[in-house]
Image (cartoon, rainbow over all chains, first blue to last red; front, side, top):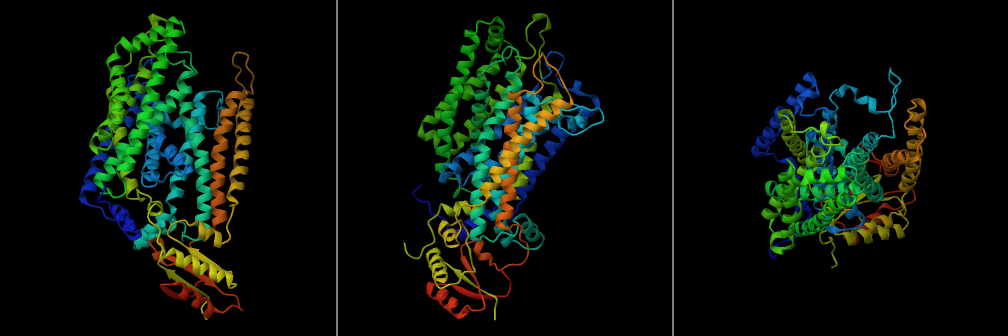
Length: 441
Length: 170
């Protein structure tokens, strides 16, 4: 943009802290709506399910995994780009990361929390969750670590812990900035949150090293998490799930969905919090290029999945693929292909790539496609395994549909709390991208 | 006599020059505070490779070993024979080790950060809130044979915007 004027350091503090310290009625209205939907559509049906059991869902004997599992994969997937992208761009010292990474990491954290809820919901009797943790219990039961489900417990616990630490540590200098700009209780709280940060050379130096190590740990972790989620499916012998391509397929899909999620979140932050000066066209352009690359890889893996299924010569695999392509849920399959493989190709055009409104719509369509993909993985395979006489049919119940809708409201509520708790754009890292404060140029 | 002198600078080159001159004049007890990370300031403070990396390495190794040990212990305490396979099976247990390597590695890096940086440090120390906005500050502490007037002159000559006497210990 030709009329762009670089902000000063003081303006960066003022503009970003304003989003946190000034709260208008519009925020409370939106917050009230999302929180109410989360309670009514998410928590109340879940509590109802506690009372009546998992029969409240559409799951049955042949299809023991339904939307709870597909939503779990979707939310885990959505979590993928935030921390992963932030870590990769930190290691490669990409400057454009600095304005967008904080919110992307928050997206990771809250998507993971939402995903973890789905594990608990799917569990049914949630009060037995401690059985998956290696602690002594009265029955002498210990977890079986040969099961991919236990890999999942380890992977998600690690990812949630690492992501929380990653975002918190990166925010410590900004908490100090909030502390310095506030008074009263807020000041006392942020004194605690910032650990008494003063910005000494030692503090910056140690944070820089620690942060780099966090990034180094997080990159292989993020790849492993969705690989492990894919093994929940691929390690079974169920036709349609038993593919070696599943791990890269899931990882690619997760990053794809997460990157689209970042575009959606950036659009909303930019519009609602007036952050146009910080979240700029360059960010959209780079995210757009990333989306093109990911859509091509994703489309290639989908073609490969069809090819290997056909080439395997297994009649069961062939039947599973035929059902996916031409069966009851075929319209959803082709919708997924349209939204995730064809429509994103429009981003090749610079004009589309630089339009916030069009990119916002495309990012939403991609995530609708990705949600469908996860639903199809579950609903077209498990109910139709080997013997036709045992074939079933899965369709989500009202409780499942309600909880699915409620999960989006839950995510939005958590994110709205976040933007009033942590500066959603990193203050000190944005300053790093500005012209240095030198007397001699 | 004040225990410390604090100077605020508007420009980072003035700030770095002052810090270098103070070091050259024998003032060793200096603290440099900046609104953004600055490699030059870290160099002046004599900081090179951080010991945090040792915490990361040791944590990662311990995590990997403890992950494998945990999976093995659970398999031995609660034996589940499956299709004649070994009770202690490497491929799945290595996945657990891998996750634990990262988990404990991250936690020990966090511990390392707190130990090396000295944070949390909630007690009152010399600090000006402008430092979190757009000012660079320098705190000089003195030994009995140091000359505070000389330090003040060096900082003023380098372009310090404000010089303050602070009683709080660094």
